[in-house]
Image 1: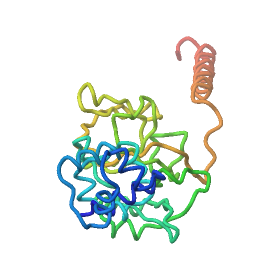
Image 2: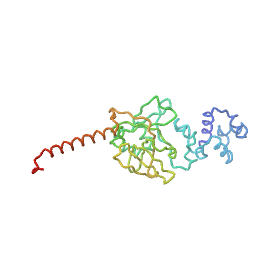
Image 3: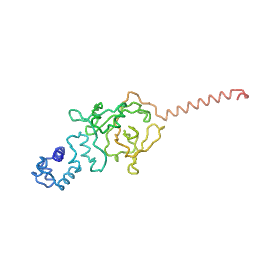
Image 4: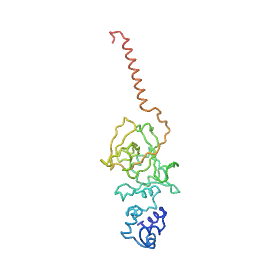
Amino acid sequence: MHFSTNIKLLRKRKGRTQGDVSSTLNMNRSTYNNYENRVAKPGVEALVNFSEYFGIAIDTLIKVDLCKLAESQLSQLEKGYDVYIRGSKLRVLATTVDQGNNENIELVAEKAKAGYTNGFADPEFIRILPTFKLPFLSREKKYRTFQINGDSMLPIPHGSYVTGEFIQNWNYIRNGEACIVLTLNEGILFKIIENQIEDNGMLRLHSLNPIYVPFSIHISEIKEVWKFTNFISSEMPNARPPENEIMENIREIKKDVKGINERLNGLPEQEQ
């Protein structure tokens, strides 16, 4: 049971003393001290009070060693994204940190995608992924970078490296947000999201490239969602807007048709 170390950690992260917490919870300071030092075990009423005070489920306080979580994971818990409270099947994300306990950004390159689909929840697999830092990103959030392929998200080029912020609660995904979605059967997808979870438990996925037809996928088929943050590419995106390119193509077609008509009009009547 991790209760004693967990309440000590959470208390310190709040900047509170034992006296502050015990006073708020209407208990003797000595009783609280005994809880932190494993001299006494809390009863049901005390567990409920601690859960309400920290905003974290009793199961989490007891079963999860919060000292082993990365900063981004602790921040998610403190913001209310507790899997036990929400009754969700969302898991604690497998992640890596540097020697200073700061989050790494793991890189899932094209060659690692198949392995990631199967090993995304395996800390050993995540540990062998290449890592790097982007200093302009928040230290309180979790990021991961995926290499994309294909032309479904043009003008973001094939082979680009897309970085996303981990989304714990999918209900908060806003319509029109670009996300990397890990699915059971389709692998890793980079799409624009239409959130239909409240209506039918679905996310509808749209491509930037209009030749690709949108499709829906049930949340039971989804394992992770990462909100688009930025992308890195060695290629320059097409500077011309698609509508200009279409208009240019139309002008070329009109020119070709005009040329054909002129040639036909110049032929002798019997040859036409």
